Amino acid sequence: MSTPQNNMSLTGEPPAKLSTTQKVATGIGWTGIFIFILALFNLQLPSFFLWSAIALIAIGVIIFANDLYIGRSAGVKNDGIWFRSMTARGILAWGTGILLTLFYIVLYWFPQYLGYNPDGPNGGLVALFDPLSKLISGQPASQWFVYGTLYTLAILAFGYKFLLKYRHNKYEVLRTYSVMFFQLGFAFLIPEILMRLNQPYFNPVNIWPLNYDLFAGYKLSEFFSAGNIGLLMLFFGIASIFVITPILTYFYGKRWYCSWVCGCGGLAETAGDPYRHLSDKSRAAWKFERYIIHTVLVLVVVMTIAVVYSFLNENPDQFWLDKNIFLLGTAVFLIILFGLIWIFKRHRLARDAKKGAIISLTIVLAIIGVFYFSGITYGYLLRQWYGFLIGAAFSGVIGVGFYPIFGNRVWCRFGCPMAAVLGMQQRLFSKFRITTNGGQCISCGNCSTYCEMGIDVRAYAQKGENIVRSSCVGCGICSAVCPRGVLKLENGSLDGRINSEAVLLGNDVDLLDLIREQKKATRKN
Image (cartoon, rainbow, N blue to C red; front, top):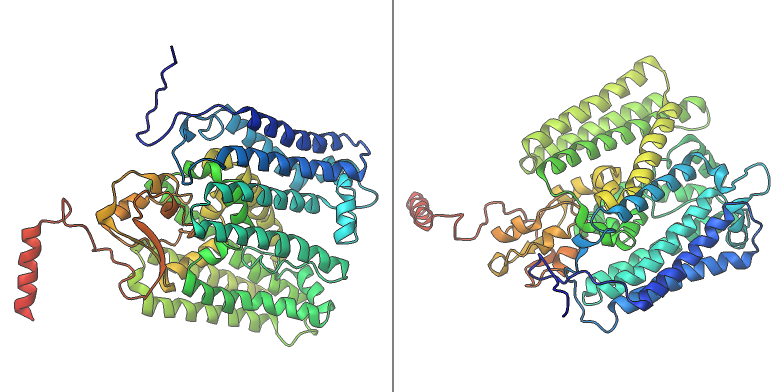
């Protein structure tokens, strides 16, 4: 007699055990990881082991994904994700989270335990990556090269798995190819090749304020000492902030960056895909998200102003820009920007958003005033603390290490200042929205379950409202998992984009009251 399978999901399937092929694939992948672990014990492994480890991990993921998806019907299914230890905050999830967190702690603050030696030959794991680093950049590996290689490998390998899983959706396929391309070419290879050519390390897709070191004193010195190439890099970095980003966000929303280009988003979408359903959908989490992410934005703005002011203060005769003129110009720019938003977009801001905007501007202007009147520079100290708390602890240790516990977009949702900037632009100025056909919604909840940014998509779909949220990264998964085609990503006119009063005629509206109101309005006209 067969054992009955108890399933609490109407549309799901009981969690299947790993097949023999999947077990073999898992073993192959872990063999590659085991080689990296062996290298930690300072064993002098030949370069063959590096290529073998990378190949074994990639092959293991590919075989596992092929067996899991090829030969089966396309489309996303509720396949017991809440019954698996790895995807339901079980022992495996907590163990994985702890290991990832420990790895990030060692990577950021104790790289010597990985074998990194800035004063001599590397050892351990870092030494294993020396041949690859010398091949690309001509220099020995650092802990950051090791991290970049593993990061890129994860996006490429799990990107393949993602492509198979969402092969029924053209949008998901295209954007996955995009993040794989930008990570491999722009985020990994180009900066290393630039170093081989004795040029400053520059990642063109890492835009301020995510790249909080763009205006740091040491980076500005690198740009200016590199001649025209360095000035071109600096110009591109500034143009990305004030020209490229606003234009692309106006037409396509923040998805052009967060879901198509950004490396943080690329890792979240590929390696972090199995954990997207873990994002907190509560109202309390949404409120905390709004406060914390904009607080980080204020911190990075203050820190950037401080480091530029410090740089100009230390080099008073080298540039036409005076430190005090810089402070006054920054203050005027922020006041004008705030004034324009307040005049033309005030109606789009909720009461707490207006209050937060006023408080944030006041804080920044007050700190600018302190710099101006005291002449004291805190740039390097602020950069050091920001790099420790936000750049390392938040974005790395928590942002990735907590994937299996809090979902794959912890950093993007609660900490990324770039997401905050793009979110404001998307909410106030962009043509992007997700339209809903509420009459077709069956309230299955797939859209809300798989929203990695914690948005209750179903609540919008049930009312037939457009989804216009500053936190939405436009990943399109809500549309991909909808069995009825209710959701559609669009770039339309700004008119009627935010239709908060659009609801279905049903329990939400008394039809007779609506008819009376329309008659009154007709008589007045």
